[in-house]
Image 1: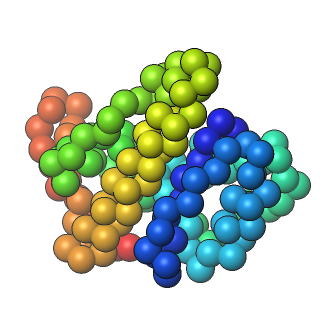
Image 2: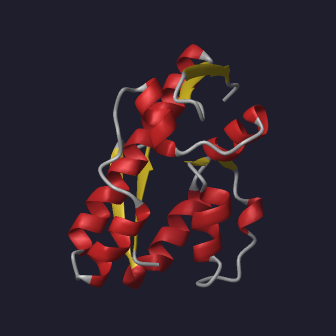
Length: 149
């Protein structure tokens, strides 16, 4: 793990973690009423399995990407959902974050992660309020789908 960021809705605060603080991250996840993420099941939890012998499948988790892919029949990127729904794009991508990490630019990686968390939070709130999410399809047409989170 290079970096991780969480948002605690109870306190309205972001928490930043590096590998040195992975135990604190795991404690926060275990104490959450609900973990909301985007591709958290197939990416984040898989990375964290290397740090803990913990049944991550027991965490109460809402993976927005998994929810959308089941509904749509294909995976849609966070950027495609964020730009279509919120009119906000991501600041970079995972490959750029890896380059920043290798260059020792941990603050940039954490800022990138925090922006992704903020976008995910906003998408979750939008979906809860309006019961729908927009996305760009493979032909770059803006589409809508109902959600129930």
